[in-house]
Amino acid sequence: MKGCVINLSCDNKQKKMLSYIIIIITIVICMSFYIAYRPNAYEIKMNDKINFYVKDKEEFKTQVNKIQSDLRKEFKDFKLKDKFTWTKVHIDYKDLTPEEDIKNIILESNKETLKVLQEKKEKEKLEEKKAKASKNNPVSANKIKFLKPCDGTVTSQFGMRWGKMHKGIDIANKEGSPIYAALDGKVTYAGWMEGYGNVIKIDHNNGVETTYAHCKLIRVKKGEQVKKGQLIGDMGSTGRSTGPHVHFEIRVNGVPQNPSNYI
Image (cartoon, rainbow, N blue to C red; front, top):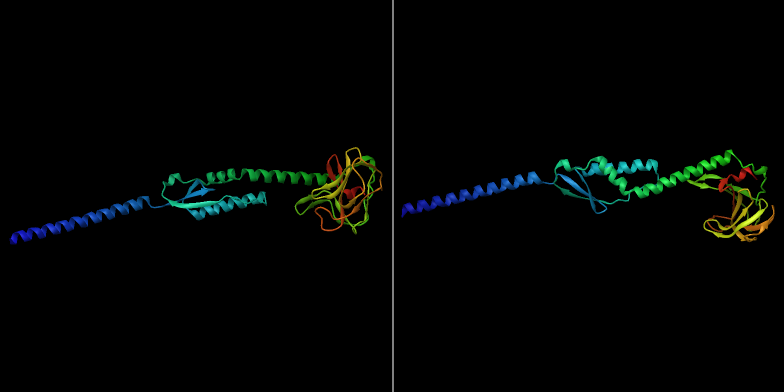
């Protein structure tokens, strides 16, 4: 009987030892698995689509900011509209996305915006080039002298203004002041136009056209022949305007000229 008790005690010790060994092995396996597969990178979604795998989230943010900063040097109005979200993952480092690929993917995502900005930039350059050309090369047009369309003070000159091309000059006076045709011609437009308000356009042949904008009242009709100095309207502040004035343009073959060279 005594020997039986000793044998049972030995069995319990062996069972406990075996349990400890199993627990230790399990812990070692779990730790090894965790070490081998713990998160070591970030999976980044751009606009809800998986695009990148990066090791450092802050480095990625820095790269994105640099891409935006570089583009703003060329296009001041550019702004990235892509949305980024990230999740910690485990990957093989050979699968990390190269910086050049990140840049190319972001540029591809914004190609339509960049296209619009490029076209805008080229248009502004062309307008500026035309403005310089018109300043340096006044239209001879048989040395025609245009009549100043109204009395008043020139409050805004021809040329670039607030990042946009101002295609004429602004002459301010009190509301209702008379506006006269700058030259003989035919009225090609007499009505409302977005931005210009009530506007009159007169064709003077040889590709020469004058424009009188922001009128309070139009006193001529489309198709009417007018003489230099003839009353055609009253000064006002219609359309995009901050006070009574005439926005006066001279164009030759569609190209805006500096009216100050001709009146």
